[in-house]
Amino acid sequence: MAGKGGAQAKPVIIVRKRGGHGHGGHHGGAWKVAYADFVTAMMAFFLLMWLLGSTTDNQRKGIADFFADRIPLSPASGGGYGILDGAMEPFPGDSPFATAPHPALEAARQPTSEQKAEDAAADDAADRLAEAETARLKALEDDIQAELEVQAGFENLDGNLLFEMTPDGLRIQIFDSDGAAMFPRGSATPETRLDAIVATIAGLIRPLANGIVITGHTDGHPFAHGSDYGNWELSADRANAARRLLLAGGVAPERIHRVEGLAAREPLVPEDALDPRNRRIALTLLRTAPPEPGPSSKPNLNEHAVVSPDRSPATADRHKE
Image 1 (cartoon, helix red, strand yellow):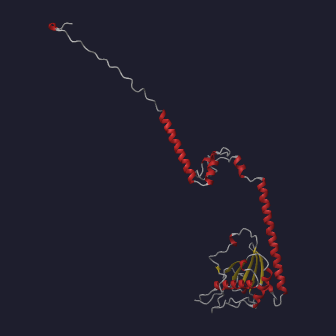
Image 2 (cartoon, rainbow, N blue to C red; image 1 turned 180 degrees about the vertical axis):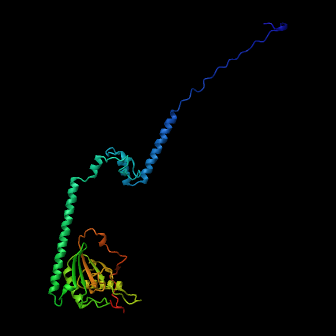
Image 3 (cartoon, rainbow, N blue to C red; image 1 turned 60 degrees about the vertical axis):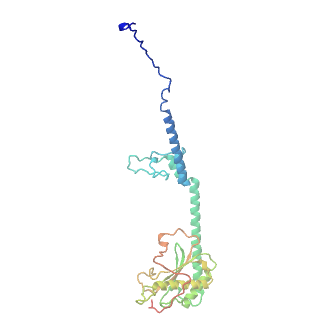
C-alpha cells in the first residue's frame, strides 16, 4: 500500500507466543496422609518401647489382660485407677452408671470346688494339730504337778503355782504367798524353794522342743525416793535369775525366746497391788505350731523391760518391795 506522498507503509509484524510444556497439575494431599500415618506409627512404637522399659512384669501382664478378648469387661471397666493398675473403680450403688458385675467375672473370682476342698482340708489339719498340741501341753501340766507333789518339802503348792492354757502355750506362774516367798524382799537371788521348783520343771521340759518365755512381775510397792533401781529392774533381774535356773537344769539356751520384766504393770490380783501373789515368775512353754497372734498377745516393747540374757542380777541397797 502506498503511503502518503507515495511512500510505501511498513508491514506490521505480529508475534504469537505459545505456552511451553512445563510441570503438570499438583499431585494432591496423598503424601501428607502417608506421612501422618508414618509419624503415628513411630509415636506408637516409641510409646510401646517406653511402656516396656518403665513397667514391671505384673503391670505388663495387667495391660495384656486388659486388651485380651478372653476377659469379658463390664461397661464400668473403663473407670480404672490408672492404666498401669489394671483395676476397676466401681460406681457407687446410687450412681446412674452402676451396673451389675459380669457373670463370667463373678464366676472367675469364686474359688473352685477343688480349692474349697483343699482349704477345708488345710483348716481341718491345722485344727487337729492345735488340738493335739493343747492335749500334749495339758498332759505336761499333769506331769509337772504330779512330780512336784512327790518331792519332799513342797507342801501347799496350790498357794505358789498357777497353770494356765493360753493362746501362746502353757503358762506356769510361780508366785509368793504368806510364809513362802520365791525371792527375798527386794532381791533377785532365788530362795531354795524356787530353786527346787524350777529344777523339777526343767527336768520335765528338757527333752521338749517348745520355746520358752520368762516374765518377771513385782507388786506395786515403790522403792525409796531417788533410787536408780526400781520394780522394772527388779522384775527383769528376777526373770533373768529364773532363766539361769532353767539352764542349770539342762534346758537348751536356744529355747529361751524372750526374758522380760513387767514390774507391777500386770498384777495377778488387780484389786490389791501389794498382794504377795503379784510377786511372781511366769514360765510360758510356747506352742510348737502357734496360732496367728491376736493384738493382745503381742508384747508391747515400749512398756516391757526386756533384758539381755547376759545381765547379772543387781543386789544394790534399796527399799524393800
